[in-house]
Image 1 (cartoon, rainbow, N blue to C red):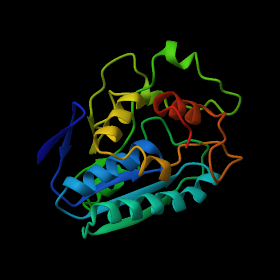
Image 2: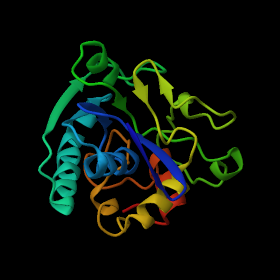
Image 3: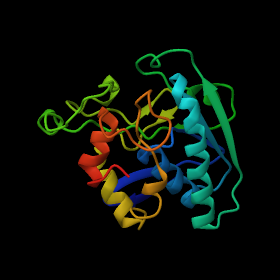
Image 4: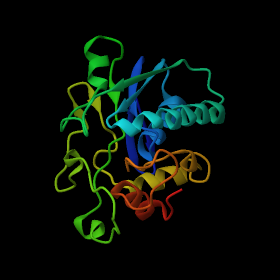
Length: 209
């Protein structure tokens, strides 16, 4: 294992094969780029569909993977998996990547989950759509990045720090526009500009797109 530091954030790069849960959003897409750049072994990209409309986001995940491979001119082996669960949201603390660890497919499963903005920052969000967020992201206390086979290198930083990493890697105007963080069930393309996830994206990057 080695550790890389980007914008002051330490990220452990484990020996492969490794897995990463991907949604097509800004956080997991950035983490995939970093793993593709620095990891040695094959990568299993795990796209988890947690709502019926997120089946459409598999297209976004494949676009992100394609961009990263082209940008880095990588010849690493990338395998894409899709898991669908028939729930509005997965159980709190649920990570499908653990199954890949448990069955020996990967040595560790990465997730791109970040910490929430402060309550004061969240109070500025102009939300008219769904307000669903993961309680796992509560920013009130420091959280362990490692948990039962999963590794969350961003779990104690918020999306503004993610923006700094994008900037340092010169990806803000290239990879970021490829990603999509909208979680409004009425939208399968673009951003609704009214759900919680869109507002967080705008708060951190200054734009929805």
